[in-house]
Each structure stands twice: as C-alpha cells, then as structure tokens.
Length: 320
Ligand code: AFP
View: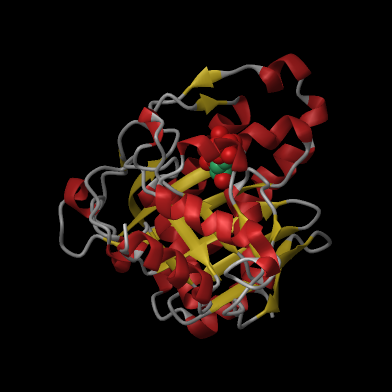
C-alpha cells in the first residue's frame, strides 16, 4: 500500500493527510539533494556556520530547512518551528495545524556518508495563539515521523494508531508500507550511548551502563552489545526495528545539563513513535510526552526504547 492510500484510509483529518504527504515529498527532494552532494563543491559541503543555539550548521541543514518551508507553504499549516530557525514562522493564515522539524538530523555525519534524516511533529493549535500553540506538550501531537536517508530512504510514521514503516520505491518515487505494525521487543541486550562522555555521567547512567558492561558475571546476568551512530534517526530506526535502548542523559557539561537533544522537534516526535510501537521514552523520571514545553529549542535528557530497559533505568533515577 502507498503512503497516500494509507492516509486516505486511516487519517480522518484531510488537512493532516495533505501535510504528511507534502512532508514526504519534501523528504524525497532532500534525499535526492543529499545524493547529488558530489555535484556540490567539497568546500561548499564543509562550509560551516552556527545556528541560533550555537550548534554547527551546514549548507545541507539550511537547504533542507528551505525545502521543508517551500512544501509547508503549499500545505494547510499555520506555523513552523525548526532547529534552523530562531523563532517560529507564522504563515499568517487560520489553518489549524503547526509543524516542528529537525530538517536534517545528524548533520555531522553528512560528509562521511552515514545515515541522516528529517524528524517532524504535527500538532493542532487547539484554539491557542501561535506563541502558546508552540509550547504545548508532546501529548498534543496528532502525528509524528522521521525519514532516514541511508542505504534505503525509509519513513516511520504514527497517527496515534500504532507506528508504521515505509520505504521509498525509487522507481515510482513514492513511499510504500513495509511494516504496518512496528513493535519494539520488550527486552534487549543492546544499548546506545556516547561512551566518550562517561566522566560526565550522573550516577543513574553510570550505574545502568556499568551493569550492562558487567555482562553475565554481573547483576544483569546477561551480556550486552553497544551501538552509537551519532545520528538520532539511525539509532531510533534500529531500535524500532530490532529493539534496544538509547540514552542521551543530562551530564556535567554546562551546555548539556539538560541533555543535548531538543524536546519539541527531536524528543517529542521520537517519543510518540516509540510509545506507539510499545516502547517507552523518558527524561529519566517523566514520560517525555508529559514534559512541559517552555521554549522551542528547550533541551531534554532522552532515554527510549525497549520498555524493560527503560523501566530499569528509571528505577536508578528514582533511587538517586
Ligand atoms: P548533529 O546534527 O550535530 O550531527 O547532532 C546529531 C545529534 O543531535 C543526534 O542525532 C545524535 O544522536 C547526537 O546529536 C549525537 O551527539 P554526540 O555527537 O554528542 O554523540
């Protein structure tokens, strides 16, 4: 079944269906743009700038954001917030839905050909003025998804009725369902964390990871493996497909005392997909989807994946 057909049959709100179809078309263009990178001079690719939050910004980050804005301007969308924009864009209309996006997540992997992607979250304004609508908690999402530009271009989507996985059929340039009921295994023996920052970890994180590393001789009585792509969409895709637990906790670095990832356009959309696939997503203690939003670029600790492991990690945080 094609994405368009799935949305016709399952998305009650026609405007929401149009927005998702247009975001999918934007992703297809972003995917193509990335693949033609060899036609962009290497100096252009490596040109760096800094975004509003002090993070590295590359030409493809900006290009991806521009592509999404072009497609949203053709969609029934009232406003747009992005990692690459300081404040939200007001499209000056009375449309009901607003969109958050990380236009190109994992951009430090662009010039080394590692999977990167686009993350989005869609919410209704709920009769709020735009500035208030953009500070609603993740529980208000009506849809979220992310595209992975990797060996295949894939697309995880939720409308709040489970999580689905699509793959781009390059011959017809359309997304086709390959799994209509993505389900994360409750248990796992694979964790994902950037172990280089061990000296910055809080004690719950240090305890949880040490127990995993102690293997079957330790308290967990089983061996664990580790993966860390350095691209949230790639790690989330693996976890949605085969299970696992992802941790980007708060740490002792000043810039990351609330974690590195952003709540509105990274943690919230990922958490919605993970929960709809039977997993859990927390900031340590609280479910991500309940965390109050104070501003668009607010950072949050993020631990998500196989529910058994997230529960064990949460117990360490509760015992802190
Ligand atoms: P970039 O977009 O700057 O590459 O950051 C990617 C990311 O936001 C997320 O996709 C990764 O999971 C995480 O940062 C990697 O962070 P570290 O580089 O600190 O491991």
